[in-house]
Length: 425
Image (cartoon, rainbow, N blue to C red; front, side, top):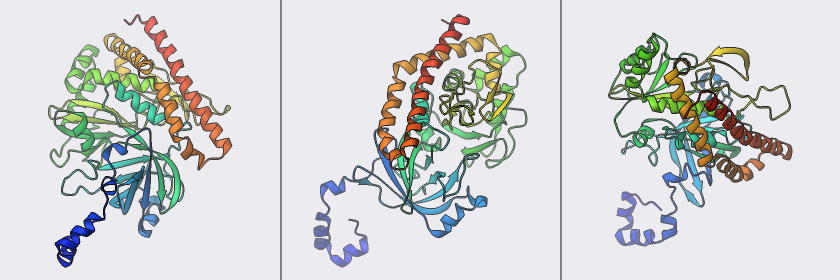
């Protein structure tokens, strides 16, 4: 129970004290905690309360990605956030859909006096899992990135309701924003950029301002309103001599971290990531010394996901792990992959360092018991999925989960073959 100052004056101190005693210790301790957002063992309930104007906006394609007002209540195990003001928009490109369907959401909390949003969160990203037949790809993929020491999102589960209507299971993905950076890095963050699909680190792609160009500045523009750090990265990325390029790479990136990042993406078969043919779904973060770290994103279409298959359900798409070009499930044409990756595998010292990291990723998948973790996640989310899916749909989800787990062992065999072929110790 919350009593404002005016009410306290009217009631008097003694009356207010009596009313305060009506709130039991259990009730006082029933508020949501920051750890509840990314707990893989629980499904958080998220209720979006949206006024009609916001409902109309999120059903209008021209306004899908414009933040609109509303409130949200989050709860689990009898603990609740209470109603919290927020702004919401839809998320996605090819996967985006109207509010009346099952869209993904981005939620933004007001900063408030503490400048940290709600419980240390500025944003929530709620993915509707429409491009993940197994529903466990993002959980497994981000877990592997984190296990390899790559700054990557945490994930949790959510059952989302919009104005009381059950939208089903979502994965709650930590947004790589300023709060994320403060937790993951010891030095000062200069910029966090989001890469635009197919643009890559080509000359001239340091164009635009924070909201335009080939890289969008999600953070840091108020303090440093230029892309000079990105200019230095692009310049080094385009050195023609392989040895000079590899040496320069160490000055403008966390080079070991970049090799790990590329190795995990390829082990997971993340064809919609930076090393894939679409050069998509990644963030880069710079410090004040203009040195960049790559951050993974959009990892739903991993573990061999092949939604474009013409074969029986459960067909797997295997991205090559050591190839300059690749197809993807929606386009059979061979396309050149991310520049950093293709230049690396073309230069033997970088290629061997990458393969060494790929070997480490394969070993980590065993050490962390990735398959077991993903099986456990499948058990946690099964009741929520069953509430919105019929028996045939649940059977297909189970088949996709089994296929994803099989993908891990298949990938490990492929890594072993590459390590043997190139004599990687």
